[in-house]
Length: 370
Length: 258
Image 1 (tube, rainbow over the protein chains, first blue to last red):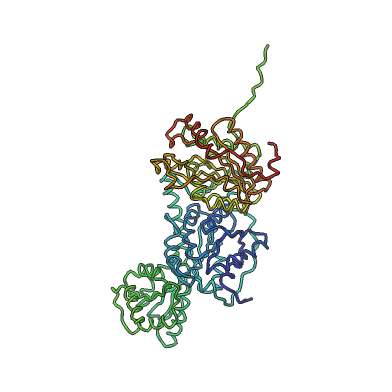
Image 2: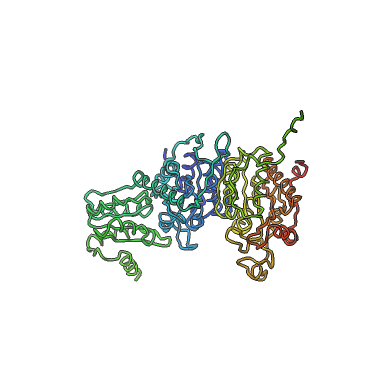
């Protein structure tokens, strides 16, 4: 049954129903409703909720709880995620499963509390120091956020990895009809690596320290092997209006959703344009973008940042077809008409493949201002 | 025929220790502190239900020496990690083993809030007045005038401020159940330290809130002393600044005889 649900609360309840055993978090707009929802729900179910003294403490509490094999989660928004980078790296190095919800807001610095996609780099290419990749899922609706939150726990446990559900403030704050999953029973079995007290078994140590570089290299290679497996098996993306599309728009999350409105409007006018919306932005659908260079004559990347995913698209395209960019920054959300304008411009004005899409986009932004 | 007198073992390695040789410097009292914790875990039969949390500093490899489940925390975050473990496994015994740089500098927020929440964990806090692992830099516990590699002219309180009396500060928090300071500089004080560690773990198993034992400890290598001089330095310089007292003891622990 569909209900009218607010994004942050829907994600929180989806996690509860997926068997979340413990949540540790810190208030920050625009994700706070998630923490508030769990502060009521988890205790009434006899599960663990704790408001930490900082994001730094929250992620390290999550790290500790994850070491016991419990299903654990935390959530935050961009500046708080920056503080969590330390813990994320340790969690990756220790290979314990954790789910992290990032409700992105405008930055850098304190920025603002408006929706943004400025964390793409810090999550997809960051996650703290060292060599590893988090799995990053980018839903574009509340229903998808619910479904991917449930899936995030499964992926985290399957690969003993950190899985980030990357949304922006608008998905966190908006309400739309969506259906929650059924309540799953809590897992009874602890995984065979969990640290729980060495009763009737050999003792276990969970750590991210490998003081011998040869050992650390082995662990890094192990992480890389797991990542290769993830890349091979866990790619997810959605395509819309791709039949006969000569121009393909690429956008994730809210930018992808707004782009879909623009693509639909363009199709109504007879413009042959389609949309690729990556759902896993890490791993990124590199192969699919490569295939698009054979099918389409141009790509338009739309983001709510200065083109952080653009680089991944460009790398996959390899200069074979022109790639253009349109972005809004600092908490601004593009309107469908702005993207429609870009689609039309690309249909009528040929683009030189050598042009720097970021510079030409900035020049167009300037001309709009004037 | 005269029979051999029966052999009585009066001293041996606690079963809660692994057979790994420690990496600590000669004369360092980390080994003594480790042994006291191991003895208490053995006496209280906690080995199988204990999860230790190692920290960053000289005791980073503590998990190699205690024969129980262990995790290794990021610098300063051991109390947060211990909180995560204890909250999902409330029937387990969870302890952190942290030095003064880890606990009283980078991890000050985590230890204060763990104590304030009355987190039912035990912290063994080694105060040796410097950062040992990185080669003897100034710590939050370095005494006024004390020379370290990052205060070569001696700690200048005008510029670097004052050392922190951690135990006294944490004892002001209502969530704390047992907060004391002891020293490891002679046998009498080592016996007192052992009893304090026992009472700290008793506090935890009785659910009486946060417990911490601050142990004044030597660092002969970085202090530039031989082990005997270092023990003497604790008595002459550290104890006057860091008094050996009970700062907070839950009433039912006060009455406990161990």
